[in-house]
Length: 79
Image (cartoon, rainbow, N blue to C red; front, side):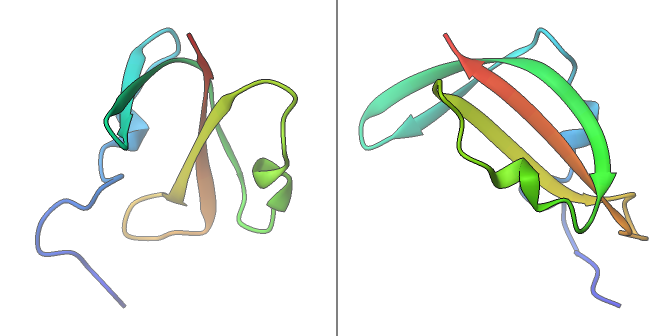
């Protein structure tokens, strides 16, 4: 089993809440998003990567921590 010696990038993703804002910095620009959904899906749920009509951020990671059998999915709309 693989384990981290320090928290990884999405280590605390399960602590975000609907309504919180987050910023992505890309090539000198800031993009501000508001979280609108946090859910757990089956690890085979590839639809979480489907294109959307509006700018939308989707973050996902394995869950639960230390026994990853599902995916934690966080989606956010561009403000």
